[in-house]
Every structure is written in C-alpha cells, then in structure tokens.
Image (tube, rainbow, N blue to C red; front, side, top):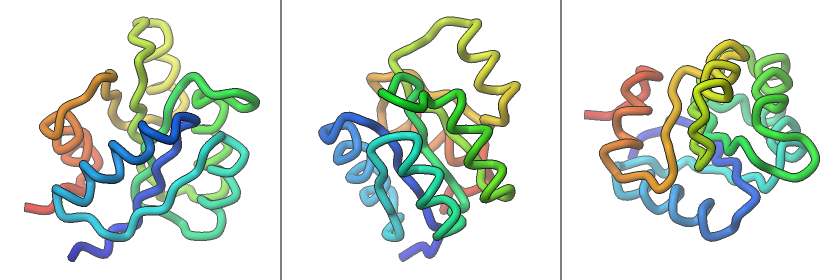
Length: 124
C-alpha cells in the first residue's frame, strides 16, 4: 500500500467516508480525517500530509481560509478542493490561496485520480 499521507476534510461524515473509501479503492491506506477547518489545521501540523482534500463550505473556518492556515503549518502539502460550490470566483480564490486542483461534488473515482495526478501524488 502507498504511504502517501492524505488528510480528508469535510464537515459531512458521509462525504468523509465516501472520499476515504474512494482513496482506499485507488490504493491509498494512510488516510486521516478532520471535520472542520480548525481540526484540519491541527492535524496538518501534526502529520504533515502530502495531500489534503478540503471542502469549501464548512462551519467555523471555511475551506478558503483553511487552505492558507494549512499551508502555514504544512507548507509542502498539496491541496485539492472537493466542493459542491462551483462558482468561478470561489474556484479562482481557492487556486489563489494555494489549491492545486478543484473537484466538483458529486465526484467520480476518475475525478479523484485526476486531482491526485495534479498533485503528483497518483500511484500508477
């Protein structure tokens, strides 16, 4: 199994499970979960993940703010936004804040694989 550390951040439990299962199906096993931006920053500081999947709309600290904070504590992490918010303005802001890829919800396995490729983290 791949040793790439992936932090999955979403306030919806079913979405964390769905994304986690998709990553496991692709071949990733080192997956950590967080339910909001604050927990994501703490876990990123602790585990220094190679990849972080991050929702935009979360209570407290939203994903756009969390990107900046995560990159302050784990500067080598690659951020993939996974969100139902598909506004061009939000996508551009996410990329400006440091996201490498943006996957719209609902997502497919292929969407996740492509996002990982954009992070140079996809295992062949």
